[in-house]
Length: 333
Ligand code: PEP
Ligand code: MN
Image 1 (spheres, rainbow, N blue to C red):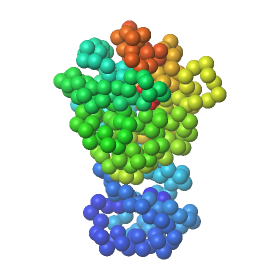
Image 2 (image 1 turned 135 degrees about the vertical axis):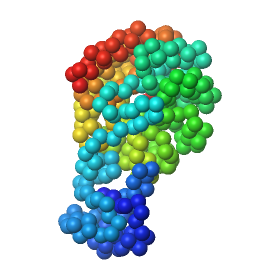
Image 3 (image 1 turned 120 degrees about the vertical axis):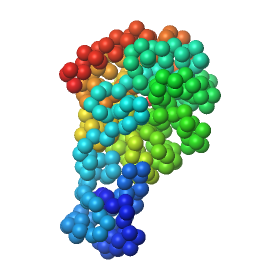
Image 4 (image 1 turned 180 degrees about the vertical axis):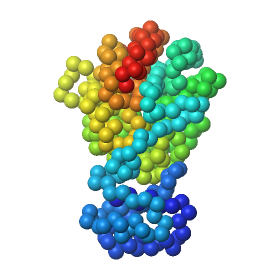
């Protein structure tokens, strides 16, 4: 059960709500986000919620039978929109594109990508500076200096930045340069990182874990929300299955299911989803048809020379064609 409280609730009214709940054997967690004040109540299901609904300070009350609560659509039926400023809004019914290299590599690389984004009217650049790599000997990113350089080039054009944060200690330094923090698949259940991201007022896109279920993804988002940050996006990026012919099994089923189960925007990552360049465009289009609010995909001037994930990265011509195809698709969405 979720109780929404009036922001101006008096301490004595809050105390009396707590008393009523505890006398009904509910365990109660208070959650204050940048927008609202909630009580999450876990306990028996047979309480007549009207006995709580009339108490002073209660704005609204909802039964939520899912084991995740705040991210559930059961209490919030309208879609959550993420407003990045400068009229860049995710989840407003138009597909959002987040385009860029797997890794930020050099100033020259970034300036070419920025030009590509501007040419194609793409408002959000992706690019990792902290790279989780399967081998410790692979390129692990340019770190904070790479992010500052990316920001310097994006800022004059109001291009927004999404980049991965790997540990809580990086958040503070990254804050000024990031518009969306990405939690990577490997960190999808790093609860200390999720707690820390719950304490900031910046959007967070959380990717599904490599072997993560849909419910685990939703519970990871719940971690962040329950610490106080409502600005969340979910990302389907493929899961590990017995199939080895492609990198991951892109779970297209998950997209519409996530949309139904949660009010949060859902972003599809077909690049990691299949891991093979020639299929990325088709999966991107399919994802939008399946209800995704946006696509995050990898692009590089010369994918064969990329320092990471070149095998799944589109070149500029392929990316431009994808954008054109999405334009055609819009009338069907
Ligand atoms: C990435 O976006 O480059 C990345 C590492 O993604 P994932 O966490 O999904 O593997
Ligand atoms: Mn990548």
